[in-house]
Image 1 (cartoon, rainbow, N blue to C red):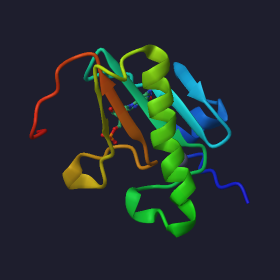
Image 2 (image 1 turned 180 degrees about the vertical axis):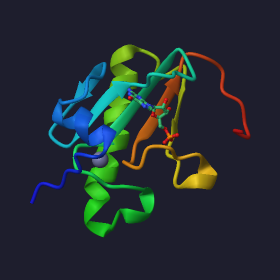
Image 3 (image 1 turned 90 degrees about the horizontal axis):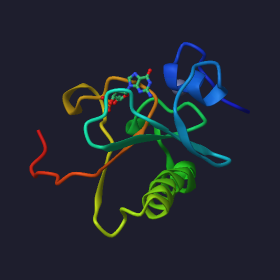
Length: 118
Ligand code: 5GP
Ligand code: ZN
């Protein structure tokens, strides 16, 4: 059964009822620009299906988790910055800084990244 949560901003973007600058779509994943970019390229890749946090993934979601990374890789190659480099980040819960409770993979690129992250 299709799981959506209409109180969730990212579900609304996935459903098309909330606008976003969408740069990637496939059957299970969409990618759109972050409205508060932390790098020249900052795109969020989300599963179309609502999953609140990384903690809510289970074994059956292995393909979906892989699809998020492959979507980001596809975008990086298509945009021509895959060899220069990019960072993928997923924040889980409060102490990691998660603010939107629909899992999302951040893709950051276009500037030198530092380590450790803040
Ligand atoms: P988190 O802190 O949960 O890992 O990341 C949430 C991200 O969503 C933040 O980088 C924030 O800028 C972004 N964001 C918040 N509201 C919106 C919105 O309405 N549209 C888009 N495209 N991004 C948003
Ligand atoms: Zn959602």
